[in-house]
Image (cartoon, rainbow, N blue to C red; front, side):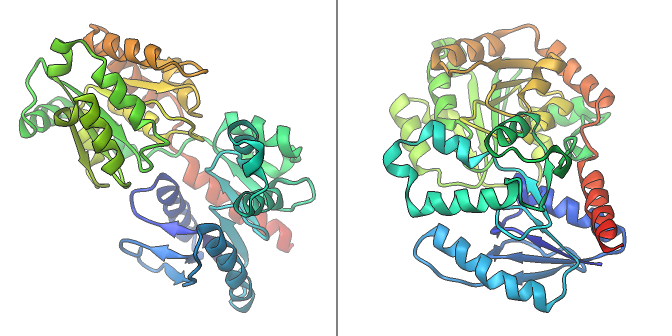
Length: 376
């Protein structure tokens, strides 16, 4: 079969983008032809994939997305695609991979009435309803149990159209047999002593990931602990606002920002704490990546996968409504705690006993089997 995978933007270090690639590769391994349609593509193109860039220029992003959707429709018809898998919401999809939280919920809870009727918001609501409304035929590949409840509350989506998937963590994040040696080499490379503490934040979109909250918590540490604590931030975003904030808080020399990179497992092994106080996060794949690498986690309950941290007993979760003072207290306590080895061991054990890995294969099976049944 010819399968179309559709997303607005591809860059190699985005969680959504990595999930798209792995699902497409799982379909390809079953013998199917993969076409990807996007506005922009950064990085290498996987072997035998056909990437189609639809180049449209508009002043605003939402206008570009509408133009992209309009240009896409005749291309899909001309090239006779058997199935269309979307990774952003839009009309006409056969499948939607639900990596983004419910926009209607966000609009209802975070925006004032003056902004709700704007052109951008109307478009995003229209595209979301095209996927989730009861009359839609789109099958939904849902990855967040938390968001499943939110979407069905807003749209009354028939449950039979929704497939709840397990996480899809890459097994290369698991702590290897030589984890201790790799950790020692990493810490030597970055001149981290036995008493030093390394906080790690991973993910593009620094604002949404709560980097400002992390910096305030770092600045609040007792002086002796703050002097021996460093923060490594890895992600693709504009660092300037956060460098300015770090400067105002007096912790600029404690933070290093790296662009997206391919050696994340080394950082997971070398750090002491994953700090991820996100404002909202559909899942939070990085939380599970940290757990199975043996890295304790401090996060917020607005992350869809935060419950895994509690279930594994591998860190702490800050409850809503968010309180910066609570995050500050939890950070200081975790960096000073003697429970680090227990949290670490619990996370590694959780990675062995739970299915945190099969999402791409199951998603591919659902896509292919659904298309076959529709054709029969």
